[in-house]
Figure (spheres, rainbow, N blue to C red):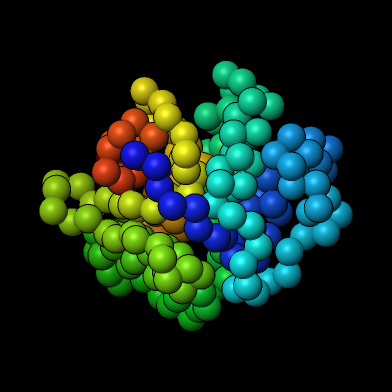
Length: 205
Ligand SMILES: [Zn+2]
């Protein structure tokens, strides 16, 4: 069942830490960095490049530390961090996401959703060629799928746990359509599924 450990590059870790600080404040960020033995990033964010920063197992430990920090409130907080993380991507990584200068207004909603989910897939693959992710259009609803999800690396749970991803996918769909949609994690590696899958559900009223 165990997956090989891999690496997360600087720009992705930078994005994560900026977003964690936005939601948890500096003290919160420092607390979870200490708890996950990533103290070396306190006051020293990784640079904005594609060199390896940390191991996937360390990234998963950081998310686990956030979960422990908030307890029952952690699901909502992780979603907020995920939203902040996509917003960071729009601000700082437009080229990586492939959204620089793109206008989606004339496209139907489904095409817009497909465009931004493919943008997420491509950005992740550019950051690490070992990433195995794709957009699933076989079902009634479009979905984002990743077989190499870093968030739940080495974790086991009866429920899906990649709430940060749910937040990011939701914010991406909001960016592309202007409408908040329900995002459901239908599969999670931590549950023993083959991949983590995030389905774009109905628009929220
Ligand atoms: Zn996952």
